[in-house]
Length: 170
Image 1 (cartoon, rainbow, N blue to C red):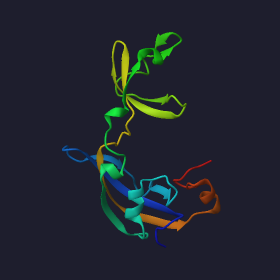
Image 2 (cartoon, rainbow, N blue to C red):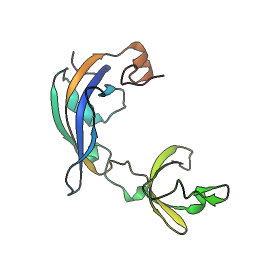
Image 3 (spheres, rainbow, N blue to C red):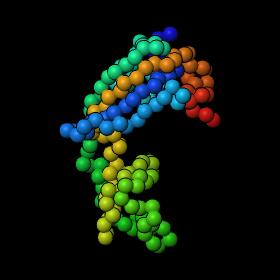
Image 4 (tube, rainbow, N blue to C red):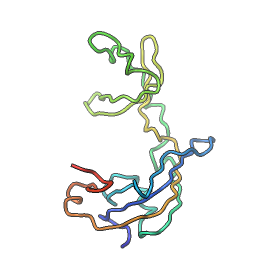
């Protein structure tokens, strides 16, 4: 069976990324015991990732690159914000235990949508947060193999994601 729309795909891969002139670094590695399983065409993965797997079948190897612009975009300075420290007060006191450099925090935008930001700096008056995707700016390199391709169940198609082993569980 070939990878195409509405198939459940299991892959094992080694993902490295390169940020500008820095050397490639390991980002993620799956295994045959814990593969990456997704619904092809379900919108849950990068379009370029799917395009590079289209038509492959179980046992096929892959080795492809995705440029940052086709992955998570370039790092955008507009997504870095100075937020008044008062926004991080709990019961009138700054939450220094949770709000520290290197921590990722859930936040709400002005329209109430949840997003995650990385605390870059904690100053006297402001907290500098980066709302870029953690892989923004990275050129990605996937090397791996297709482990399995199967028909999606009616329930998986209705929900838009994989159920069962290594997929989403309700």
